[in-house]
Length: 507
Image (cartoon, helix red, strand yellow):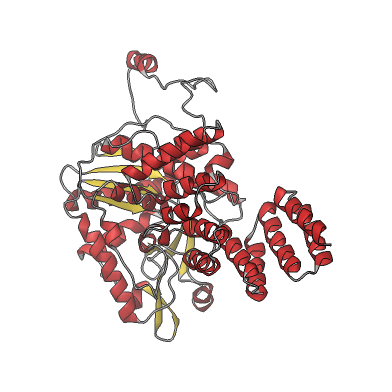
């Protein structure tokens, strides 16, 4: 049956009255797709100051909750915590739900409905007496039963806060889902290979259809209708983050296209049929934004600017607080050469939200490049939020190094890598600090790690330049030149030329 039916007269009136019914000409003031694309959307509610907002789903939900918390809203998922010895990352990421059929199960456990959670039934035993809960994101190390049950109860406590909630944000992530034949349910993570070898018939991969996703969303809505406030509203989004890899035989690009298409169609179907639901076009924004502006070099992780712009648009529309993202506007000013204007926008953003670490890092970079006082920049990046940001810590390490604080610089770089081990800029910064300290063994380890992790030629070149710096520090200039020649084959960057120039003076 059709998704909607309108008369011919109404259809033509909608075409005429809708200011967004046509594509705008590129470069005009009406072009809503220049820079970070901003498709129009309709809001279904307004968040009242201090209200509780529950965020469910994949990683975009985590971006939204951070912004909403900064604006003073109560975010239940931010109350979740875990022993740092078990997980040293951001705690709420463990609440990520990647496949829609697995969400209702988590809510039922929290409210004591249906089959209760059992370690023996719902988890896998990886080593004697140690288990893994495949419904907790993050691939936590196997733990004893009491630890597993403690984590599960902490998660249940978060979900129980859905009771009486008026506002929900749901982000849909993937359609490649793992089915557990033992429990007849979907799990949140791929089962470990060891378990598949032990019991090859327990798990199987399901590539979900539109009907599968739609049915799971209807099941979820039925639960929320009973648990949440009678007038609750839910904003549905499709995660703009592409799948990292596919378990199918398709090119990951084709598998991802299918996945997002299915999720987008299912989202449109439920939003059109349930008036308490509304759609936010984060996925469309990323798809219509230039690739290098939407995603970093690995083509999987979104750029900070694109995430911020989308979260800012969404929160501004639903809260009435803030308009255009100041960081996005600052980026435009920078491209136009207005560095002071960009800096002023960022100062205003920090004044409004002192916890806005992204604005602090952007401002710090401008001030550093323009030769401002390094101690003031260090202070700008010395906040509680900075201690939890790998980007802030990495840049602070650079400024500390230039300011002559070698030990503090090394510690800042170490903290950045400990916080985010896969952050390539952090790995490179720590390697450079080890070189400065004469610790060549640790520097080589970090650079080897960086080279292995790098899928793009520019980062491979950076790793090789780091190795050239080690040879330079050892006065092995000929070997340093050989390594730079290898780096040139990946990326002819000004950085390579600068090291060559320095070597030329030393030989």
